[in-house]
Image 1 (cartoon, helix red, strand yellow):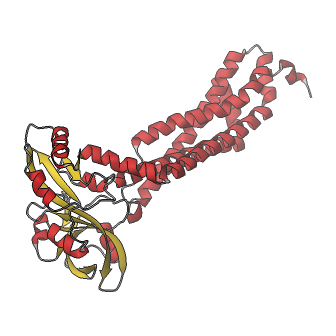
Image 2: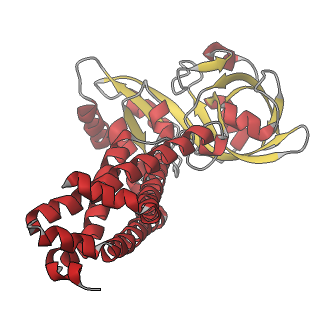
Image 3: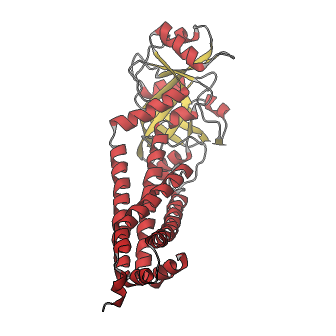
Length: 379
């Protein structure tokens, strides 16, 4: 019976292609939009992710995300360092800055200031130069995407000079920093230089990065710091989650992407449902003939579901391949750097595609089950 059903389906190529297109389009749209959504959420905590040495973040109690820091008094650093169980604590600075090239090109960037002595907070992978190069006068490290943004058509090279808020800076290293949420340009420099570039006022310390002594849990040290200083102290994982939740709660990103995904599912159901309904209507005499020779509803139901599974599997395969091709060919684009097709999304969309096909098939099953065998003898 399954073979008969597939022959019926393959015999009507136009509707077969329409069914496959409906499933493929929904799969492509849902996979692409969902993966981009999770990619944006990952960007919301990219700065936190790149600071691998610290396990506790200390900040003003009002801070909810890494993207909106509130300055602390410089004396807070000494208070954190003096708490029992803290192995080390270093300053960390974050600000939005205006960057200007010698050619007059202006761009907005993220400036991150790290401890002058330990240089804690820089990503591990240096593409050019080394972490020691940041100790030079006016030295900064920049991500490759930021360099290409400032110098279009050029490959990253060391020694170029730029201006940060009208102060000179020299590119001493190229570092593989994660894509940031607010800008494609990320700059690392020493804390002392970062505060000179911004000149924010009396209070300049954005965060204190700390690490507990061996054998102590970060959660315990975070609670101790919060109790002793009155500041907010959380673990790296907690701060990462808070930064993501802030984006979910305060922006329209979830609604926008959720709407597109929902529309993709609705369009898929509409295309597949209407096309399959037309297919059943056009082949109603064949179904009646099968009933006339004694085929029961249960076997007809199985045949119809096999047809739907055949269409769903092929459509899902094409849609998934198209989504993977999109992320593959856009990988070199700096604006889309870091976006990729998540395996978890592909698995979840497989279930969604199955539901779309099943929901669409249910709309047509009634006509198959109630068809009168005598239909085959009518003109």
